[in-house]
Amino acid sequence: MSESASNCLDFLPVLCVGQLVADVVVRPVTCFPEAGRAEMVEDIQLLSGGCAANTAAVLAKLGVPTRIVSVIGRDALGDAALADLAAAGVDVEAVRRDPDAPTSVAIVLVDGDGQRSFLYRGGGNERLTNSHVHDDLFRAAGIVHVGGAMKLLELDIPALMKKAKSHGALTSLDTDWDTYGRWMKPLQAALPSIDFFMTNAEEVVLLTGISDPLAAGRDLLARGPRVVLIKRGERGAMLLSGAGEKDFPAYKVAVRDTTCAGDSFAAGFLRGISAGLPLEESVRLGNAAGALCTTQISHRGIASFGDVARLLEKEAP
Image (tube, rainbow, N blue to C red; front, side, top):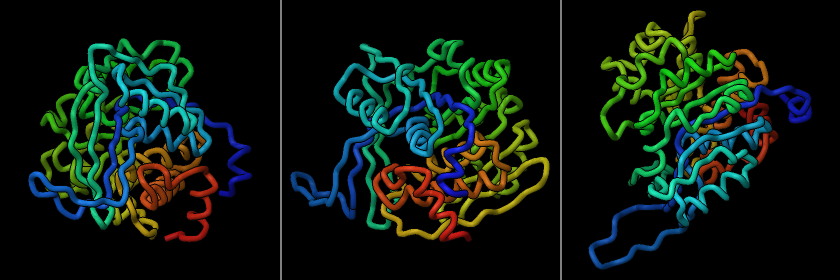
């Protein structure tokens, strides 16, 4: 799809609910310094992060009207994360500043191959509740997407998804690594109310207790979601639905930082759904957005839909 054609589309507005984090990205990290010593790195950046925020930023840059509901602190880290997210074009009016909680923060350590590890401190994410998502936000949303579900300790996800459906919205959820070890417990009752359930090959195993990701995806689909998407990094993505199963290979790019790849996949996929595209075309768009994201720090590899469209046309797998 060309950029000019995309400008003619009517998009369903997306409401992203969930993680907004201050990311301190350090790259490349090839070793940890000995005590009392320093190691040189090429780049350190402070920017917005977190699953919901990353997906919102990429959606906005892909031309989709996007709002976010999150909780951050009244601190310098929150100021920086919020400013970075607003600069991407996201409506941040529904972000709440909590004077009694710090902004959640992640130190993102990126190695020479672009793979990342995290040091995470909780804060505002863990204080997000259903009361922060007002009725007017549901009424204005065509898609309600929960990003980073596993760290949203106070959010009643089943109630949120049911309410979104009662307002006529499509629903989407993306997991992340569960540092609290709850996995399926907060999600089980929500599954019948989720249209698009996104996870990755490692997390789907832990969610279901089934060691094979494909079998785990089938088990997850049987529990209620309309569609299950399994992200597999450099191996692309897997789509499971009532219509069948299909693998979608990844796009080949020069990888610099994989920090935001899964969230960008979610954004690309939801961009397709928002525009009314078929499922398969939406998954390809997700793969292209996820791949392009890895060429720069965080979501900096994507500036507009034109960037993704050129990759779709040039590097079709």
